[in-house]
Image (tube, rainbow, N blue to C red; front, side):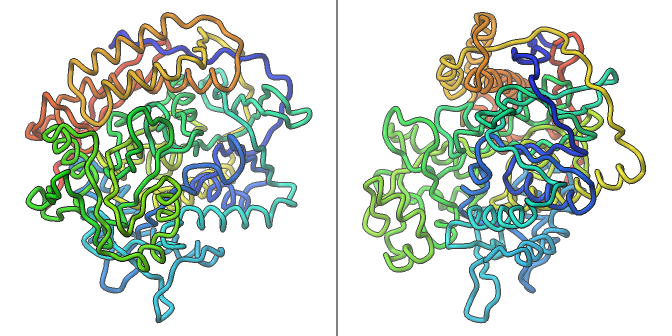
Length: 558
């Protein structure tokens, strides 16, 4: 038991309109789009809701690619091993096994759907390598625009069936909270739609199942590679409804984010790991290659190792960044292989072919989230989660590069198949949402910068008991000072960030070790086997958050 209290719902007006579907899918990245398209082949009515427009989620920002054992010289077993090593001993082996064995077929299905990956002279999909991988298994498109191409192909497939009355898309829709019946089964969502005619304002969408594919929580920090829509909405709504969250302390900070100077905030430009995969390397202000000798893979070590090394070197030199040196790759190669990165750097005044690029770690990916089983079911009946909002156990303490798109793809198929099979068996009956109950909360949108500052200062790339206690206190003060304000999307998002920040800080304070994306300056060694396991959090009926620890069997990482 802790003293952390999370309310049941957000302050919002009564729903002014209603709609219904067999399944509501929330989110339009690779996870949401794939789930919706596959479900429509099997169920009568699917409602896809997305926060802004279809192509503004995190998927389109994925530069590196999608990992799968597509090469004859590679194997799912080798991909499995690399994933377990990156996950620092707490991956769910069964989940990773499903990922790596089903992944190649899912990628080939994407190609059949219309996704155009880069190909070699023989017409085969061109494969590259990224940090933590021991084989070339990263498929990419447009050099460094893989996510954008996958998003394009999936949206095009959706557009081909949009005349189908069995699938409906609502854009500009922010999910406020989950609807539950008297038995706590999830049976829909409340959502706010901006400027959609009679659907303007808060409404209710009832369903027999809800799939959260809402992405990550990057905006809880001052600097992130995530888009502005990544405010942890799905994770926070699931928390308030009583779903179990797992491993939220494991936040991956991408090591090479372009450093734009003091005070830069919001979404920052990412320099893909694939640049180092092609031969770029890190140096400090004196030109020293500090990754050599730090890890057998040097500059291609797993992201947590590289991020920690950069933070250490910045502390040693007193600098706020290090440098990425790609100059030896040549202008012609860089412009052909990384056109988006080169163009973005040029817009910001950097020439990748002639200059060292200042880089520093920034928040990139949430390895934890809504805990699910192998078919995407959460601890609440009727609620599924897919993609970054979920915690399938695939990533453990640290996601292996380019496994995120693959996870969304593989588990979207598993979720769609499970839901359609359950509906065919007469399970997941339509039920009536209960009346809103319990305390409601709302933090004014103007407090967002305070939430972000507290999280960045105390629960960022490097943490300690003292820094986490300071963050917890700052967030608690914000929660206690929250007054009733006029509900609006900015306030709902800010309150979601507060709630996620609170449980993340709690989990990080409990885990007294350094492991993967969780770096503790006061517990630097990963030596005590009692920490090999998952941190689980759940909001109880009394509004208090309880925590438990679930051990994981030892894994062979040699």
